[in-house]
Image (cartoon, rainbow, N blue to C red; front, top):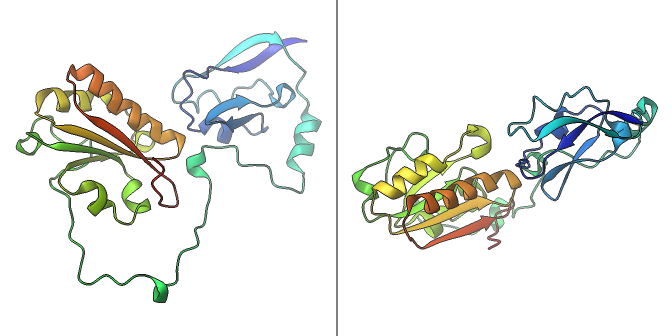
Length: 232
């Protein structure tokens, strides 16, 4: 039958999972970091997912599709086995096994902070500041310093650090970062992000800023796992 049903533009989808959380029928799931319409007959065509999408990736189309099957939706919800997590991977609940306190390594003395300037939030940082001149710039996702135990020593030492979360801030950092790179003598850029898809927004903003600045600056991206490992 021809009926109204949602369509998801994969190029616009940023993998935040908001639509999957908003879909009460379980019609939308996250597959390879992108929202997917899993079953036509689970989609009632009411569009609860549309206002939840921050990028406008979801629209209505009219096409050949199976009729909405309310009974199938109800049966799916009643299954004894819990449904696989369909939201943003960044929302997935995890617990990590850590060594007991008695087995943990002992550190002599108090570690010294390597934060070189204030403010450190991308939104609050000035476009021009003396500490940017000749600086090695670290653009880090908020969670990285919590996930990686030696973050200050490994990544922040000798760098100017700017932090942010593209999902929680709901802003495009690329314009601000472009201005910072263009108007200051930045020597290098390191991006530290988490493995979750929403962190890709920070990486993309930094890459866009580097391109739009018109400068050729050495740069690298380091990805951390949610359990605190360096992946690349």
